[in-house]
Image (cartoon, rainbow, N blue to C red; front, side):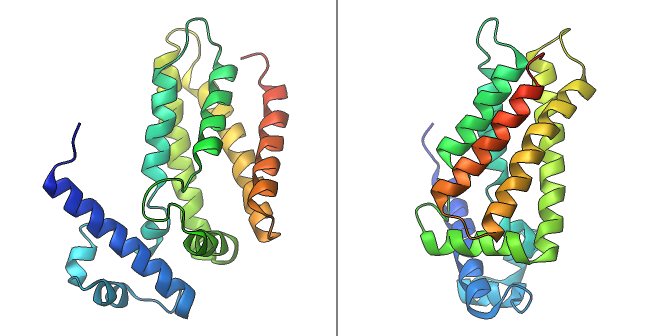
Length: 204
């Protein structure tokens, strides 16, 4: 469906806010950057900022919803006879191949991606927000798996499987960032986590 003018303008404003915020995070530090400064640099009213984000932490995780939508599209496209473990593997492989930041305001921008990684690795408030975002995604993805496997799995089983996969991948990914590993090393580390978890999910 073609993007409307209004939707395009909202997307562009959102992307402007994200890029402006990340530039300021790099130049003067995350904690030192205020929402008022981000708004002023983006040439918008501070109240307009809150039409898009509830705080600075939400700017950092602007792509979380896109990740959920990608994952949901895979789950809803379950193949005939496909087991949960195999479907979960496909969702993880898609997220790695598509790249968490492959689209959107930071797409193709090595500098902004590096800022994002540094925030995840070094800023406690961002790490706390990341855990909240991850847990919310885990619950929503578990809901989608239950809907895709009616009468086959219960919600607790789905959440345990999703939590095992996303938790291990996320934990190793964060450590990889802290170690300053390259993109290739990061992907290899996350795929290693997937392989280890899949051995334990072989019965699903």
